[in-house]
Length: 90
Image (cartoon, rainbow, N blue to C red):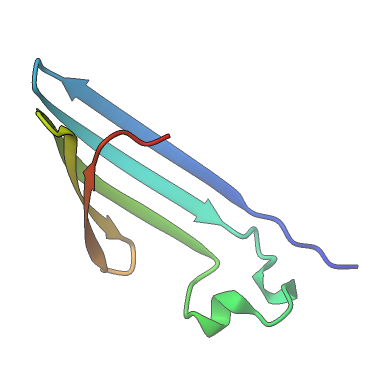
C-alpha cells in the first residue's frame, strides 16, 4: 500500500490605500512523513525537505497598465526570491 499525504497552509494579510497596497504572507507545507513512499523519491532528488516554511512582504501599485506587484520572500533554508507580477491572477 502506498501512503502519500501532504498538508499546506497560507496566512495572507494585505491592506490597500487608494493606489498603493502592501502585504505580508507566510506559507507552510509538509508531506506528513510520506515523502519516502513516493516513487522516485522526488523530494530527495530535488534536495527538498519533508516540510518547509516561507514568508515575505509585498507591495502593489495601481498603474495605467493594471496592478503591478513586487513580492520578496524567504524560506527556512535561507533562500530568497523576488517575484514581479503585472495584472490580476485568475
